[in-house]
Length: 275
Ligand code: IPE
Ligand code: IPE
Ligand code: MG
Image (cartoon, rainbow, N blue to C red; front, top):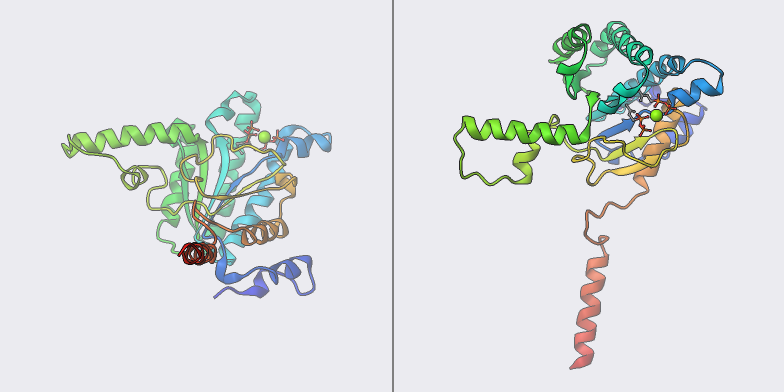
């Protein structure tokens, strides 16, 4: 049962937003492109890395809120395969902050029954980072609440290529020489095999692009872009994104429910008049 008292203080903005949310129609999986840390720091005349440091408070609040809303999955884009192009110091600081976060937050993840899973080319990260990730993943493996995926050294195209290679391995091992690949089989070889696709994709800082994130999985995600920079992104903004999501009509290429019947009626009326 969702405990509303843990989600908003009485009389707060969060409470008034929460009242607008239909708790029976929450997205099951929310994916977030956490962007704008550099600009947040720049606007304060601080070095970029201070933006990353400040962004950790947002991660903490959003993951905890997702758990309290009893969502199924949250996926946060933390480091892309393209982000290696950044200055060495920035990359090193990001990795240091990640390790620090994992060490500090493990207890909270356990308390909130959160299962932590990194996705991406994890083998390409520094061994000390891999160790911390593995430890957090193992410790939380039996938790049954929110699945918290963090995308690290992640690229959507890299994932698709890795998937093709995994499929080739399966085919070789199982000697499936005549196999015809379908979408379900492909999906079962993604990093996110067994995880439902995101219903809602949030991007902070106003940029209108997907930057190589979950290309296969976001085929039918609703997209919410906010100008809020990631270090300023709080529970209130997550609630706003969910309200926006709930105002959308998801058609998956079909027509609105109700529209179908109208069309049939119209056709039969036209048919009648031709008689
Ligand atoms: C997002 O913030 C964090 C990472 C990509 C690691 P940025 O560092 O991209 O911030 P901006 O886009 O430069 O403001
Ligand atoms: C996307 O942000 C990657 C992450 C949030 C980890 P970037 O800041 O790297 O993306 P671009 O360069 O604006 O497309
Ligand atoms: Mg950016």
